Image (tube, rainbow, N blue to C red):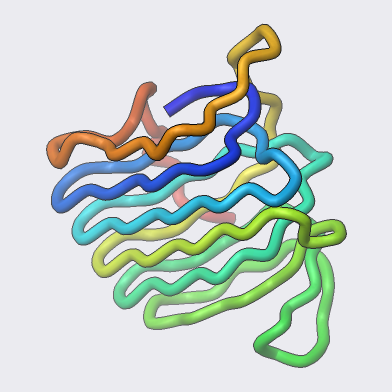
Length: 143
């Protein structure tokens, strides 16, 4: 799914990858659930959000400098192995992003949204079960 600024989105898949390439409006709410497949979020460097991420059998990594809430301390980009739950804040935490993945890694990347214009996405978006991605996901391993 691509867009300039998301206010609210719900992305789900039973089998397939989910990729979101967008920015988050202040106060945005994004919920992502994947049973079998990777989740990749590509957000602008100016992102301000609280992330609650859980992966049963995949890794969790973020390129954003952040403060880990569940660890009580620590800042910077990080990587954690399978079976992890992480809560962290990027910037002031203006938006809320919840991600659950049963079998597949979660990757939160810095990037510039490819979409142009000033449109705002406000209606919930539910991805089809076979593939929730608008563009291919690279198979590169986390750092």
